[in-house]
Length: 454
Image (cartoon, rainbow, N blue to C red):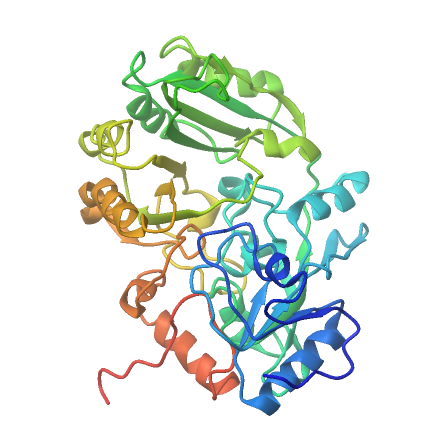
């Protein structure tokens, strides 16, 4: 691909050129696109020009913002990097925000906070708001307010023929259904979205850290506790074996740690009362629970913010069997062949209720999610896959399917189908065939029409 696209204001990168690797590489370092051309789009016009250029050459197009969830890397073609499209406009009277394709949640939170408002952001503010929402989006206020996708009002998208289309429930109901929960890249380039905001300025949140060896019943205690809490309480528990090295804080060094993560949309007094049973299960290594301004909501999960290579699998579960929970400290613990982070999130509540406008978000009946994630080096992918299979295997009978946002790694078509309710994958494939008949747009998971009856 030697031609140079016309009418593009942003930078253009080719292989071996300075800046090419930085532009094509996102937060996820295990899988990176290897395009013939990277367009650093600065706005919708750049996206249109890049798509038209690719169409004229018969080249494929992939889209990348922060690059947290690159599952299916593309070889060749045109990569449109949206990281420069990071604008956020707030309408405080309407309680809405317009969010450009490359804006991370941190920027949306910063823009909305002065008005006493907050978005349906996730546990890591560095994640791109648009791709997160296109995958559904289960965040810190999920049990009270549902999926981030439920709060989308409209979107703009550049189509395969280079047109700018406004996608609304009235004007384009099929695409509006598909884009909210159908994931990234299948139908066009989403350049922005309007979302509803919530009158939230603070929460009671943080973490309780336990040594699994000293408090072996922490997972079952958390599961039992989740059956008693109101929808204002969204929580998770993650287990991580910390290495015994000087770089790790002394109180966590060499320990298998269970971190209970709390986000409560209520008073600090009520939050303290609700978490008392968790504080009573054993002495915590750390207790970071406090009244938090929403601008500090990253402290709830306290996730790493440095790019690295990782791989994961997940399941959405109808329930958690206490007997199966007892397997997790062993299969995903210090004796595992790779470091493994095992995390469960409490769902139910608002996510289980049908949204005002239907969407492609799958498995709303799930009450818990289970995720196994490992940091991997090249050549360890198969080891990680087998490890995650072992972690998840005891829960397969309770599994409804997988979540599209929490899986990092290649999916087969059959695996991709399990992320959606029956019939929805084929509906997505039909919309893909209608809006991208030549398969220009490289999706983050395989999506193709059902050929079983052909």
